[in-house]
Image (cartoon, rainbow, N blue to C red):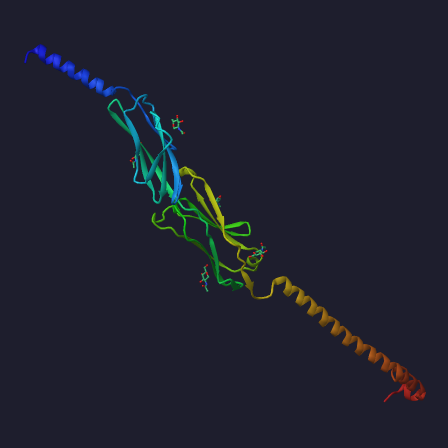
Length: 279
Ligand SMILES: *[C@@H]1O[C@H](CO)[C@@H](O)[C@H](O)[C@H]1NC(C)=O
Ligand SMILES: *[C@@H]1O[C@H](CO)[C@@H](O)[C@H](O)[C@H]1NC(C)=O
Ligand SMILES: *[C@@H]1O[C@H](CO)[C@@H](O)[C@H](O)[C@H]1NC(C)=O
Ligand SMILES: *[C@@H]1O[C@H](CO)[C@@H](O)[C@H](O)[C@H]1NC(C)=O
Ligand SMILES: *[C@@H]1O[C@H](CO)[C@@H](O)[C@H](O)[C@H]1NC(C)=O
């Protein structure tokens, strides 16, 4: 091969590489929405589109049931995907001037926390005794997006997230142990489940349990004790006072009838000599 032949071959190769590199036209593939959360067994729409003016072909790759809706437009196509039962990835693809491009979309399946069950164990407890509050949501998904909050009246007792949960698990439980105080009986306990799908392209779902009342029994309350002590003291005081009064009055009356005057008179009646020198 001549030197000239070698150079022309190299030039041809370079031109070929350069043209392949620019790939006809540069184009993009888009998928809408960019994030997607679908309720379990639910369906949703997806729009695949491209900036390529005349794509050779395009479509959506998925294991899910899909159906193209509306007529086929060269630059975009809408699909209805249905019966979504697990997390998956959808791929939109278009081929433009012999070159294929993909864009993927993660689909998260969720299940709303419809049932929130709150149990107080036991529901009747003595002051100073331990009890447990247990809140369970039997079917909710994904647990990573769930927060369970325990309330006493409007006060938050505990906030629990499930970021480290086993992905397959669908039941969430939180427990709170405490020692019964009399005030616990005054306000109800409740449990709120919040599924926040906003970062996954969904919305926020909240559900709250039935309120539960803790029955607290036990030693009489301090202020009741104070009242009882006061009443007993007053009664005792009145009793003692009246007994004393009776005694003093009794003495007084007795003295009036037989008492000191009689003694004094007798004393006066005594002869002077006896009075001056009593025995
Ligand atoms: C699909 O997406 C393309 C590109 O964003 C847009 O032009 C088209 O109107 C969309 N179709 C529907 C039905 O939303
Ligand atoms: C989806 O695409 C992104 C970048 O476009 C990539 O990082 C990711 O690995 C892809 N996911 C799957 C499951 O193909
Ligand atoms: C009650 O709970 C406390 C800790 O909260 C624990 O130390 C104590 O042993 C428990 N008492 C009973 C009777 O379980
Ligand atoms: C508890 O969680 C709820 C719901 O996620 C949140 O609104 C609240 O700010 C949290 N409170 C605390 C004290 O962490
Ligand atoms: C507590 O809940 C019960 C129903 O379970 C309700 O009748 C009662 O009014 C509630 N008490 C308070 C203080 O909210």
